[in-house]
Structures are given as structure tokens and as C-alpha cells.
Image (tube, rainbow, N blue to C red; front, side, top):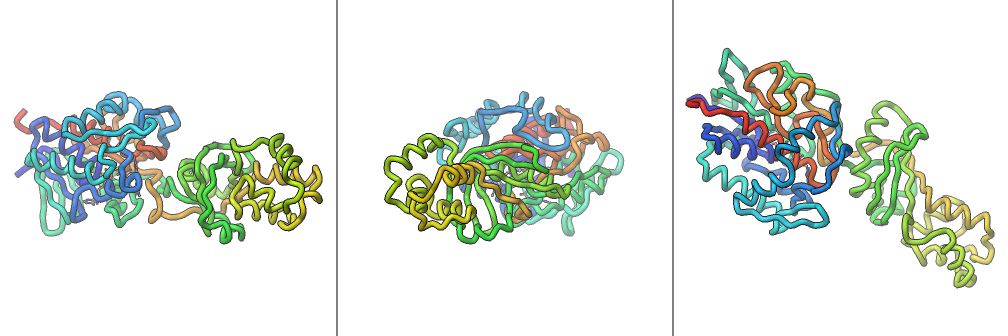
Length: 407
Ligand SMILES: Cc1cc2nc3c(=O)[nH]c(=O)nc-3n(C[C@H](O)[C@H](O)[C@H](O)COP(=O)(O)OP(=O)(O)OC[C@H]3O[C@@H](n4cnc5c(N)ncnc54)[C@H](O)[C@@H]3O)c2cc1C
């Protein structure tokens, strides 16, 4: 049998493509290397699956051509995605623009997509690693173990290489290269950053609402705000994930990277701190005074970095020391020496060059009938539902190009 389309990878984008193509009357085969479809989705959004986001601007996606996804997001964006899931009986919950399944369980998203696939009689083979794709005349020949399949079209939806245990192991890049495509520099994104500073061992476990900015060779590049998590190796948490790509890109170019944290972005101004100091501070130690408005371990570290003894009486602190303390709180500088690997990253930066793929259809410019969807492409989104949205958008766009052989 020759399928209208064979989809390599049954993740978020592959399943969306399969449903869309089958909905157009096409015969579809999904080949998935894991034992189940959509395993990675189960881990998304801390098991709740943040599937999209109502906010969108030009900074939400990155890559060689950061503008590449936007025209397609106009075709199939947030409202269409919500309708798509609603049409399969899954409602969503909007938490300040961040969308989740109404059940707040990622398994609902997988069950919804897999259930629809079953209802459409789409052929699915699990534990089926696609090892080779060849095109001879108008037919794609796909090898998986001892089996060989034929398709009029192929959608390469094999994901990136973040967290291999969840399925995508980077094998899709090899398949793309074997078909003549270029794969850009690959590195982990949405990942924690490492610092060699000794105080991190002490700070491990502290969480603090902070604003932070990435400085590359002394130049400010990007800022974020949110809860920063201090770990024994450095910093983590959503605001760190959001800026990690800029820091990693610069580190890979051997540039100097620092993150400057404001440990008290809103809570207290210098004026208020001085007033508080004058009013109630006089009988306290410097550490007790700082603990009044920040985490104890952070208070200790701030003083320690300034070489002010924590037990110093606040009466002994002059304007100069107070100013130094204020500066250390507002400009807590962390030299960045490294970053965590693909095993801890949420997405892969880089991928199949979008210069070789048609914007608007996702068809290869090299082979007619070959399409790419999701993370395998050089498109990575920020945290907040943007990567899954891209997976659904691109899956729909590619699936919608496939015509049934009898049409
Ligand atoms: C821990 C974690 C949390 C995340 N949370 C969020 C979130 O809340 N919101 C968000 O938007 N994004 C999130 N992401 C990112 C998001 O999950 C991915 O970007 C998205 O799943 C990519 O979809 P995809 O279809 O391109 O790839 P995947 O969903 O990774 O699917 C690719 C599939 O292809 C299969 N495969 C790979 N190679 C082959 C092969 N050679 N043959 C056969 N099958 C193959 C894999 O097993 C896999 O099932 C998170 C990622 C991680 C790791």
C-alpha cells in the first residue's frame, strides 16, 4: 500500500498533522519510536500542559529567521488551536493568558489527540524508529527495522533532542541531512545556567522574586522578571529559562556573560529601606535587619559578598555601607560559566534551516512532498505555551497540504 502521507514522529506536531490530513480524506501512517504516542506532552507544563498563550509579539520565537512562524500562526493560531481541541471535546482553562486543558492534566491532551487518531482509522506503529527515508521518483521509501513503507508524502515530525527519555533523540536531524537539508547549530534552550561562584552551594533551594538582565561583554541584552531558583550549580526557574538562549549563544561565542539580578524589584525602595533602618533597625544586627525584607540565606550572602560581618550592629553601619548593601541587592552580579545540557532543556535551539522550507506550507524546497513540523525546524519559542503552539500550528499547516491520492 502506498500511503498519502507517512509521518515520522507521533508527538504534538505529528499527531496534529495526522488528524488534519486524515480529516481531508488522506490515508495516513504514523511511525513513532516510543511505545506510546505523545510521551513528551505528558511532561509539559509540570504535568499540566501549557498548550498555548494569548500574548504574542516578535520576541516569542527565535531562530535564524525569527519571523518565520508568524504568517502561519495567523492561519492557525490560538483561536484555531482552542477550536481544534474543542472540536475533539477538550475544553481549556485560561490562566492569565496561559492556556491549559480544563482538567489541568497533560494526559488529557494526549488522550484527546490519540483518541481522535484512533477514531479516524489512522495507521499507527509504535516502537518503530524511522531509520531511512529515500525518494525515488514520486515515492518516498521509509525503512523502520525490517519493515519498509511507501508514501506519496512524508512529514518529518521527529522533534529536537531535548530530554531524549521522552522520545526525541535527534535522529530526525540525520534523516533531514540525508535528504540534503542543512541543520543549523544545535544547542539546549529554556535551560538552567551555571556559575562557578561558591555561594551557590549555600543558596541552593532559595526561591526569590527577582528581575534579571543578561549582560554580554558588559552590554545589556535582555531582561526578565519572575521567581528565580538558586541551585547548587547556579540559577534556574522560568525567567532564567527565558533568557538562557541569549546567554548560551554568547557563551558558545566565547563572550563574557553575566546575569545581574535585582533581588528586590518591587518590595522596597532605598528610601523605604533607610526609613525602616532609622525606625526599627537600631537594635538589630545587619543580618537581622536584612532578614526583615528578604530570604535569610540571601541576606547572609549579600553581607558576605560585601565582607560585612552578619553580626555587625546596624548602629555601626554608615551611609556608605547601606548604599553598598542597596547596590548589592539591586545589582547582584552572577558570572555565568556554563549551562545545563539537553537532558535538562525544554527545547532545542537550531534545527532544519527554515531557509530551505517554504514559509506558509512547510514543504521542503529540495524535495516536493517532504514537510517539516515542530521542533525539528530551526524555530524555538519562549516559555509559556509557544513551543506547543508552534507544534500544533506547523502540524496543521503541513497536514493541510496533503491531498488524498484519489483527489
Ligand atoms: C519537560 C518539558 C516541559 C515542556 N513544557 C512545555 C509547555 O508547558 N509548553 C510548551 O509549549 N512547550 C513545552 N515543552 C516543549 C514542547 O513539549 C515541544 O517543543 C513539543 O513537544 C515539540 O513537538 P514536536 O512534535 O516537534 O516534537 P515531540 O513532541 O518531541 O515529538 C517528536 C516525536 O517523534 C518521535 N521520534 C523521534 N525520532 C523518531 C524517529 N527517527 N522515528 C520515529 N519516531 C521518532 C519521538 O519519540 C517523539 O514522540 C516542554 C518540553 C519539555 C522537555
